Length: 416
Image (cartoon, rainbow, N blue to C red; front, top):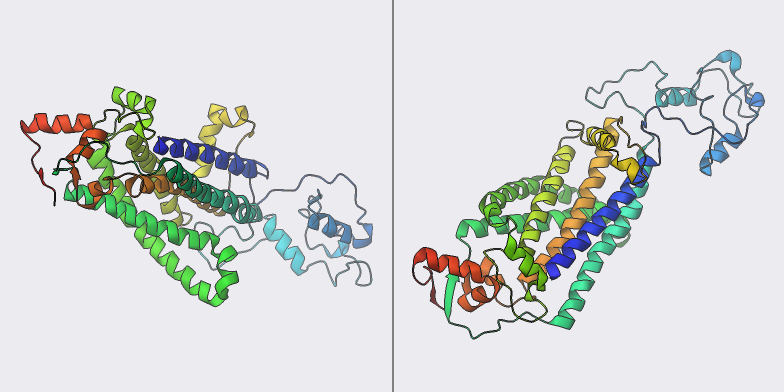
C-alpha cells in the first residue's frame, strides 16, 4: 500500500510539475529568437533621441512593464536618425554597438560566424531567462519538497507501522527468488540510478547550496567531476533498464490477483497478506514507473548528451496541439516553433522533473526492500528467501514453483 501511495503521490507531483512547466512555457512568445514584447500601454516620446531608446524605455524593461519593441526592430544604424551627442542618449553616428546587438536579436544584421553547427545561426536567444528562473525557482523548490516530503512520510509510516514482520514460524528452508543475472541487472540499475541522482542534484542544486559552503573553486572541481560521472554512468543505467525490462516484463502484466492485492492494501496494515505471483501489484507499479519514467529520462538525457542533434519538444507540442488537450486544460496552444537552444532548455527541465518524480518513487521502493519489511532484502541480497516469507508475500508464485518442480522447490536449502 505504501508503494501505491508513493506512486500516486509521484503521479500527482508529476502533474503539478507539468502544470508549472506548461504555464511557464506558454507565458512567453513561441519563437524566442524573433519574438517581440507586447505593445506598450503608454506612448513614449522618442523625438529627443531621434527615435532611439529613451531612459523611460530602459526603466520600463527593467521593471518588467510592457514595452514597444517595434521601433527597435526597424531600421538600424541610420545616421540621419541619430541624435546629436549633446542630446539625451545621443550617439556619435547612426551605427553603434547597441545597433549591432539589436540587429542580431531581431535577425536584421548581416553577420557570419566561424562556428559551424546546428545552432550557429542563433547568436542571441533571449528566451533563456524564463528557463533560468524556472530552474532556480519552482524546479528546485518543488523538487526539493518532493524528496524531503517523501522521506518524512516514510519516517512517519515507519514510526506508526513499524517493520513488516514474518507472521508465521520460519521453516528454515530457503527458496531461490532471483537468479544471479537478475540480481546483476537490478543492482546495476539501482547503483547507476543512485550515482546519477547524486551527481544530478550536485549539478542542479550546487550553485544554490554548495557554493555558499565550499566556495566556487572547490565546487568547480566537484561539478566537473559530477558532470563526467553523470554522462558516462548514464549508459549503464540505460543498459540495466533494458535488462530488467526483458527479464521481468512477462511477470509484470496486470491480472485479477492485483485487484485483490490492492483491495487489501498489500497486507501492510495487518489482516493477512493477499495472494500474489512473482511480483505483487505494488511491485508492478514500481516496475512500470521505472520503465516508463526511466525511458523518458533516458531519451531526454540522450538529447542533452548530443546537444542540438535530437530536438523533441516542438514536434511533441505539435502533436499535443492536434489533440486539443492543451487548450482544454487552459494552457492555450503550445509553441510548435522554437530554436535549438530552447529545445535543450525544455529537455533539461523535463529531464530534471521526471528524475525528481522517479527518485521519490525509488525512495519508497528502497524503504520497503530494506528496513520496511523483514526478509525482503534477501531477495536481492543473496537471491534466496525464507520459504515462510515467500508463502506469505508471494503464495501463488510458491505454488507455481512447486507445481513446476513436482516437489519442494529446487534450491531449497536449510537456512544457515
